[in-house]
Image (cartoon, rainbow, N blue to C red; front, top):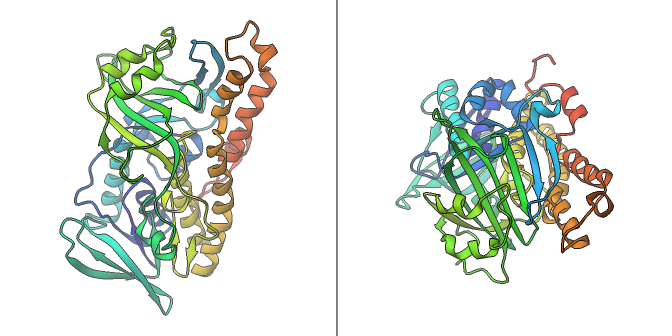
Length: 420
């Protein structure tokens, strides 16, 4: 079997490695002219680090990031209302790793080139169309840098892992239009600073309308850390030209006033933001769920299939799970058609539920519940938002996202032929 993967992001590269581990040949075509470590921080949750361990990548992942110890939910007044351990500190067999997105992508890219060969990833190949005939699919390309047509490529299966603006998704849904803007604007950056709290803590503060998230994603020998931070602010209108405007520079003066008056007990937000070398501004967007991901010998993966709001640290994790599930089914089923049906049955309904949950704030809803019940503060947290209710919110999200502790720890590997 031969497979074409369109897109060399985290999902596409994880798919190439997973197919290789399952004995299936693949080649990755990327529209960018160069694979570079772009982006800011992300979290790789235990259900995804489990899969990266099966691919032999966990030691390198741990060296490149920070093993998250706990997540803490904090009000704008500085009150910690919920704290829970993460990864191995919570009893999982695998860690949660906070890491720069570019570092994770390059780790996967280097592994693909080492295992599949230097020619396994082809750059400056922008997919513009796909056609199918006699159980094969052919992708047509052009140079992104010049628009010059390139020779097509044909395989038994095409995996569209080309992101939220997927050209191949648009091929089968031409009237869908741009991603759906959710009314929030995100400003993201990284700052080199001294550790805060445990030095491995993820803080989520504020409410749905004004939120601040930060965590360390790398440790330097001198004890300082690369701190990733995200400022989310609800705005009535967006001045983005389109919601495809992902990488424009932002200004701290635009959003810092929204955090005026916040407590600096746990975090000094102005100092953290003020020391950032660069700030990027994004529209918080997703896409509506699709009734199908598979179209003959073409299937969708990662953001091309289920782009969702960046809540719950799940984008990269779910792309990795897509890749692992698809490779496992292709290696385990009698036909490609059976494998694609099994992949979609395993992943699409779960991702539709998760996408809708992210629109409702996921586990972060605990902050909004407290704010609605005690907007001016409280004397007794238990009387306002009981521990049992807070715990149930956290557990419900873990189950929906696929990292329920007991179920995950007992789950078998998804590499065919590897014992549990």
